[in-house]
Amino acid sequence: MKKFLHINYFIIALVIVLSSTVRAQENVSKSSTQINFIENSWTEALKQAARQNKYIFVDAYATWCGPCKMLKATTFKNNKVADFYNDNFVNVAIDMEKGQGPALAAEWGLQAYPTMIIFTSKGKPVSGTVGYIRANDLIKFGRQALNK
Image 1: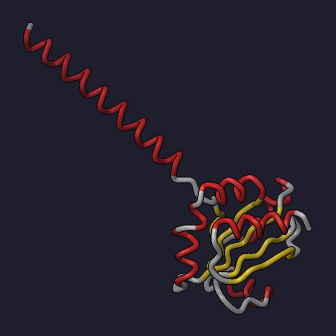
Image 2: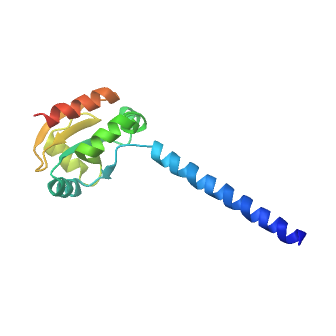
Image 3: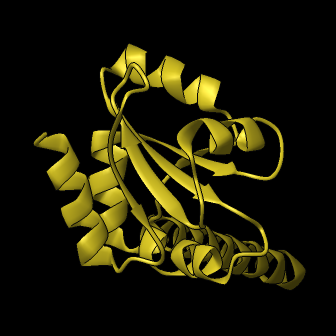
């Protein structure tokens, strides 16, 4: 009988620990908000923008680019920025040195990275900015594009 009680206490304790761990993981994922990007597919971004009737936000980057890495680590992970861009745009991050990147860089006349461009759902450029940008300024950039 004692052995049976010990096993029951162990099972109960295990269930409590596991359920606490699951809740902690859910809270972490909710608080780690960031801009949700389509990776390296301008074609997919155009399809989704047409389907959702939204503008497209492009993060044109290079893997070696320090300011590009800073954007990904800070500005793009800001909760207000993430909420604003995820609600209002189809977001696409494109490595400008592979896949469709080099052709798009030539077509768009890109000279430096990071370059952020907002396009209509049909792929017409609306607004652009070059270099690292803070969270509040990125929101302002997006609002200005939506008002054009």
